[in-house]
Image 1 (tube, rainbow, N blue to C red):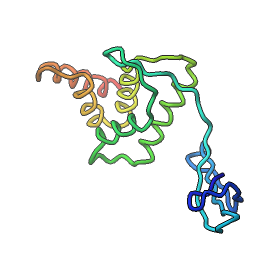
Image 2 (image 1 turned 180 degrees about the vertical axis):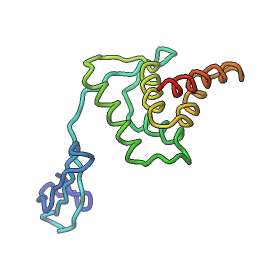
Image 3 (image 1 turned 60 degrees about the vertical axis):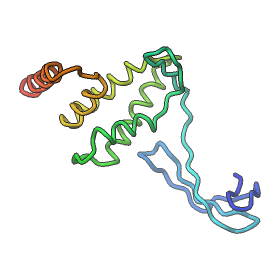
Image 4 (image 1 turned 120 degrees about the horizontal axis):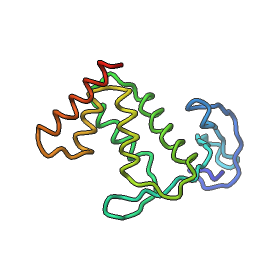
Length: 154
């Protein structure tokens, strides 16, 4: 591993631990040349599908983009950062395990909404109002009444 300080290629691992529920290995390293320490993270690289956007444009799946959307929807809600990380990680894993080469952005949006619905009703409505681009209050109220019926039935 290349040292970020002196660019020397030789370093040794001085400590190693599992992180993020066992999906990441945290390693503390020391450079053999300059003796400075630095941290690396190792995770399994999944082959993720390409996201096909509404306009037909294609881009690589970006977990950080999903996480950013979750954070915005859950802003000022009693939801931990760890819970959001877990939901983003689960979605990424689900997409990787699907084996699909391409996935429409609509599918990703729907899966994010499903996760938010089970996590927090307010966050779900926030995300849905932007994602579904409600044109007026009537569309918004239809979605709200579906949410209330589902909650009352469950």
